Image (cartoon, rainbow, N blue to C red; front, side, top):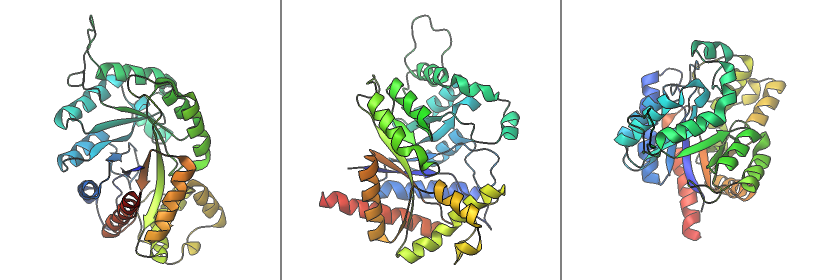
Length: 332
């Protein structure tokens, strides 16, 4: 049966603040582990007023310290922004503090704009070294070898699980070559989803890490008591996407009754493409949507995004998702 997990961006809502967003992320994880979610990941994004997870390893520590069993990790660390050695130290420390619960997903994109990339003091060309950086990081997290003069402390021999993440065919090819689990970001870039999964599975080479392919797939799910309420709650996300195309960056807005009054036809077209991997509705609609999506992708795990303005409604969304999938497991 497909596993369920959560992608968390620490969304800042209008009328609230960043501390509340981070505490909400921790509270969500506490609820999620009681509902049977396998993991919760946070993503590295910079210079986004509505996203509070830029210091990704610090946010992971905040969430892990407030939970007991759920796996907590990066979905992901944008490795070209960092020295692999530093990431090995950070995640080795996390694994030391929270043994057996830390994941490290790795992305090749900068997770920001070019101006902010310069503020990070990173060369855009560093993305070309991504495969070598992944192997270097993997080595720092593995056992210390004879003659090795640089050791990640903590980090060495923690063997933090690595994932390759992507929204194109590149990540699928690299994950297959290295024999690592693969996560596809179809929650915002669904266009190449099917082809990427096909390439990953066809080209996968078994490794010491993984004997067979393991695919995690991102999907937006807006669950509520009824289809109409779910469509209403989803407008907050739709407005955020429209704002992105306008070059406007602001906290998450409360939902509105008629999204058609907010966006232009062109913005709607772009948003529908970007949010193509989305399910919204009441419990039965969500169950059918998940069944169809899993049948299409054969995903081993779903990484669910459920961005809503009202935190209580957001919690309820994840609870409904877990409930309908729990019923499916019971039936199976």
